[in-house]
Length: 87
Image (cartoon, rainbow, N blue to C red):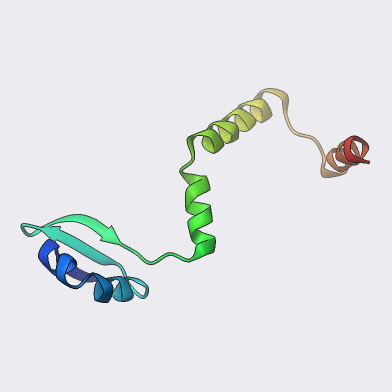
């Protein structure tokens, strides 16, 4: 893990971003940590967007509540229903 202050980040942005591809960089302001820069792949970025999307999280919560209330179904039954809807 590397540390960089705000001035260093401003003056050496490209260099710090290259470092962040390999390890986390903690950005400090007045000696206190304020942010972490971490490299991310395109696939991980897509996951990040989903994991932080309020509509997606609400849909997951609704599905969890429905599962707890009604229970689940076997995979074979699900596949039959899906096939009959799209078939």
